[in-house]
Image (cartoon, rainbow, N blue to C red):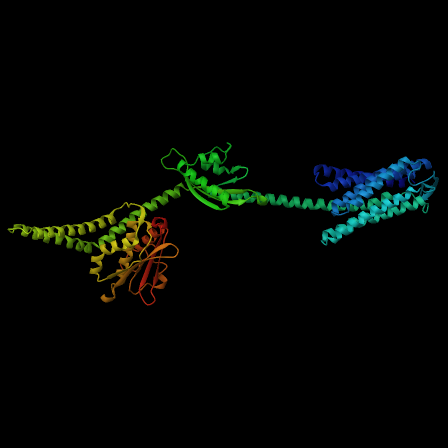
Length: 618
């Protein structure tokens, strides 16, 4: 007989164990309210099992009624906890139904402790001993109370809440919601219906058996535990995945750190709203700041050379406001003769949920690169100078002829003036005209020498607004004798009203001279009457002033058109292949473009364009 009581005691003990497990889980993770509600349900069922076990051993009807009275408390707690669990897990359930259940339960509990025989009996029932599953247990029979109807109504409203929540979850349509509605909602509804029907049959005296609420409640408690265990399994899987991801991220971070160290890159990040600033260790080392010292954008800017500080800050601010990229070279303050150059690259981006812009970037020491570029620039300038000297060497004969004409005229006029002065009387008017011719010839010789000196100077005057039409006419005068000796006719088609361009006058002269010399060489094998070179200027729609040099030669092979501007690429038998390469370098340094194209029938046209300075023209 004792094993029946032990079974109820074991169910109660199992409920307490489950309750403690989920209570600890909830204390570790307070956000998981379902664990706390499950623990409450398990504690309530454990209390109900104790009450049922005690009713089966009751020595009198009065003791039985008193135990039934006190069982209303754990039953009420169980109902409230189940409704909360269903609400949390299914995410459904009409609140007004829950409030109605709470109100009716409160009335029933108050009535149970106010009435002499509780809410189920109107008088003291009779005690009986019956055989139940091989054992003897206590049951009672007696007249039922009218308050029992209110208990039935409460149970019906409670079932309505459960059914409504289950249907609402099912109507969502996704597989997980339907599974929970069928398994969780269905098990609780079935167990509740069976427990309520069995209890009412006991109170009405239609069946003879002890209370069976605990075994029925264990059914849906098992389902609730299964649901939470699935979550725990899912959490474990997610935890394992997170751990694996963390390891993978750690490996990636190690690789990135190695790559950054190999490339000598330092990373930094600046949050525009909070003004918080972060740098990697390499950034600290690049800037010469102690790693353990507090550092912000202000401290970083103090390490920048005063002449570059405003430009660096302006670049970062533009990314902060415009959500764009920036690149800036700046020097660091140093007592050394050779400054350290740092390249800063970065980009602004919107923060999380469209928050303030965050600027992220890298720093890299480019001192050696800047030094090499400066050396290359110096060598390029020397090469340009040597190229000009070489061109003038090729024009030496023409230059000698150009100077010989005014010098011969000066000598002839001076001799004529001597003869006029020896006559008596002297013709002063004729001498005055001769002296004017001498001055004129001397000026022409001085212009030739001045143009030669400007072309031979190694250091140029730098950028200034110049008129490309004037440059074309100057080069035409300087090369006139050489073109005549080559039997080349030079035509000019100059546009009027051209705006000036900001350029180095001598470098532009060198480009134009190179192109005219190439045009003359291209027509060396042509008949004399076909040796015509045309130089034209025009203003393009994009604001560039374009200069064209066209010859009437045989043209350039199509496969060589894209290569003729490469260093040491030449189409001449005795060429070095540096002229056109220097032309491209000069034009690109002025922000312009240069290219070549063959004519429809013959000849080649070289075009170079330099951006116009409209504000200077205005």
